[in-house]
Amino acid sequence: MKQILLALKLNLRKLILISTILSVSCLFIVSVFILNYVIKDQLIQNSLLVNVKYASKVANSADQHFDDMLKELKYSAELLGQDFSNPQLIQEEAKRLKHQSNKFNSVLVVDKQSRVISFAPQSLNLSPHILYKTVGITESLKHKSTYISPPYWSVKHNLIVLLSQPIYDRNKKYQGMVGGTIYLQKNNLIQKMLSTEYDFKKSYMYVIDKDDRIIFHPDPSRIGEKIINNTGLDYMIRTRMGSVRLINSRGIENLAGFAYIPSVNWIVVSQQPTEELFRQANVILLKVSVGILIFYIFIFIIVWRMSRFISSPLNSLAKMASMLNQPDIQENIKQVDPWYFEVLKFRTSLLLSSQTFSEKIAELRQHVNTDPLTGLYNRRGMQIFLKEVMNLGRDFAVLAIDIDYFKQVNDRYGHGQGDAVLKTLASLMKNNFRDEDICCRIGGEEFIVLMTTSDAKVAYNAAERLRKTIESSNFNFIEPITISVGIAFWPKSSDDVTEVFKMADNKLYQAKNNGRNCICY
Image (cartoon, rainbow, N blue to C red; front, top):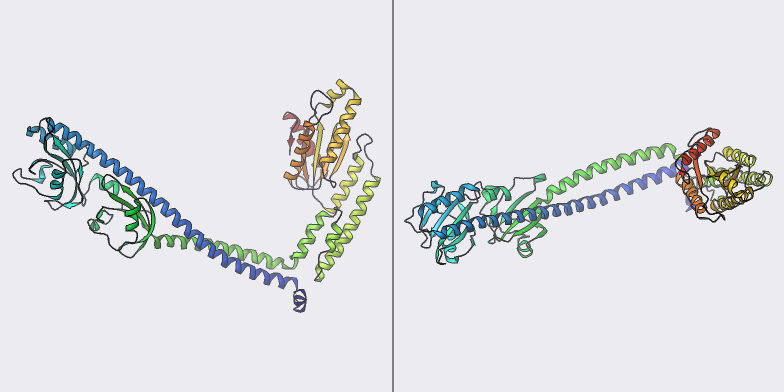
C-alpha cells in the first residue's frame, strides 16, 4: 500500500483531502440512515406509550363516572321503593336526578308494565298510557337488576344509552325501574369526558361498544357507525388494554393505545396517524441532517486549510514531543515510518531534541544540589529543572506543600523527631510521584513538587493521594501528621513562573485557613 501511495506521488495535502472527503461522505450517509431509524422508532414508541396512558386514564375516569351515576340511580330507586304509589315523590325525584348533577340527558321512571309514569325534562312529552317497548326499557324490566343498555334509538329518535336500577317496594316486590339516558349525538357530561377534538399533531380519541360500533368520535357523523376492516380491532377486543399499530376502516395507518371500560363493556381508543408522526420525524431528521452537514462542511474547510500540517505520523510524533523524558521515547520515535519528507525531517529533529533533553536531564541529576537531610532537590536543583522544562515549553504544575503544626512537633518532641518526620515525609513523596516529577525541599517544613502536567485533575489526584497517605502513616507520634497543599499551573495560571509560585503559595495559605489537611487549586 505504501508503494502505491508513493507511486501516485501523493503529497500530504492531497492525501488528507481525499481521506477527509471519503470519510465525511460515508459518515454523513450512515448518520442519516441511523438517525432516520432511531428518530422514527423513538417517536413510535413514545406515541404508543402516550396513547395507551391517555386511553387508560380516560377509561378509568369514565368507569368511575358510570359507577357514580349508577349509585345515584340506586339511591333514587331505594327512595322510590318506600312509596312508589306517591306520584308527587316520583316526579320530584325524576326532576332532582335530571337537574342536580346534570349527568343525564333525561330521566325516566317506568313501572313494571313498561309505562313511563314520570320523566324529566318535560319536553320529552311522554304519555303515561303508552307501553314503551324500546330496547333499553324492555331489557331493563326483563333483567330486574342494575342494567346498562347498548346504544339504541329511542322513541324520540335519539341514539342513547340507558342506565337503570330496579325499584323494589318494602315487601321486596318488583315495581319497575328508574333510569337515566345519555344522548350520544348531543352534548352530555360523558361525551365531554370521552370525546376530544383533534389534538396534538392530529391525534384523537374515540370509543367503541361491544358490537364494534362507534359510541364517541370527534366527528359526530361517525357516531353509530360499525367498524369494519380495522386490522387492530380483534387485538383490542381480545387484549382490552395496550397499544397496537393498525390500519383503520378508512385505510389509514395509525398508532393506537386502548383501554377497557368494564362497567359498559366499551373500549377507549386514542390514536395518531402514523403518516403524521413520520412527517414530524422527517422534519426533525431534516433539521438534524442540515446541522450535521453544516458541521461537516465546517470541519472540511478547516482540514482543507490545515491539511499540510495534519497526518497520522505527524500526530504521533507531536504526542511524543511532550514525552521526551521517558526512557524508551527514542525507540518509539524510531518506530514511526518516515514515508514522506516532512515526517522524516520532523523525526530527525525530534530524535536530536530527545537526545539533548536526555543529556541535560542526566547532567541536571548529576550536578544539582540536593537537601542533605531529605535527599530531595533544593532550591538550586529546582531552578535548574525549571529552566530546562520552560526551555522545552512543557506545561507543569507547582504543588506547594506544608506540614501542619510542625512547630508543635519540634517543641513537643524535639528537633530530632522533627527531622525524622521530614525524612519520612520525603520518602513518602518520592513513592507517591512519578520519576519525571521533581520533589524539592525549599526550607523547614516547606516542600515543592513540580509535576509535568497541565491536567488539574491529575495534579489534584496526586496531591490527594499523598495527603491521605501521610494522614494514615505512623510517625511514632500520638497525634497524626497532616499536610496542606496549594496548586498552580504554568502557563495556564500565568506566563510568569514567579507569579505561578506565588499563586501556589496563596492556595497553600487558603488551605491553611480552610482548616488544614486539605488541597486548594
